Image (cartoon, one colour):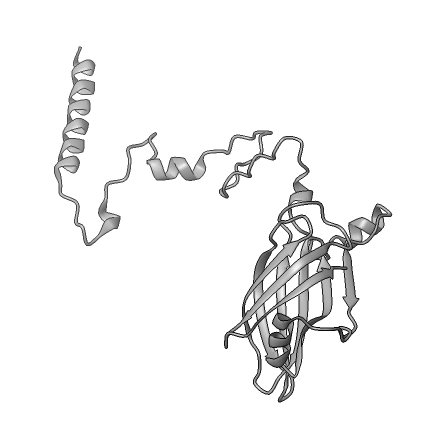
Length: 221
């Protein structure tokens, strides 16, 4: 009986001591004064640092955005235009390379209509297509002209033999000599199958100074 009372008193003293420790305020300036956890217990930080990782065969999820779902029946590699204009794949498949380059001779002198004569008078040598390069559906057209005043194209419209308009994506003028001007027109076919010998029914070019010309029946490479 006496032994039981001694054990009970010891427990009460221990509980009282713990209560006093809990009631003692913690000094904010000294984070090391926080009471350590009781024996047999661990703080959440310690538990987190000592917990063993659970092994899993599942791959970790990537923080990047999820990949877009492929369109059914469409090869993802075919949707992006290759940097080499498709030459490597075409040669691998033993097909015609989807690029081309054509240099055009100066236009022959012919009888001019009244409108053509007005256009002729606006230049010493009227604009004409000098060189065209093709990369898949993209055409880069070099137009050369000669006049006392440099001619810079500000607007271009290209109409194919199928009646479709090409999308003009760039116009880059350049003066290469006091009287010779180059205008580089970049355009893309948005309709129809890509291929060689596509005919442009008309190329309408309007300059910054108001001079304009229509070039007809120009075959692309």
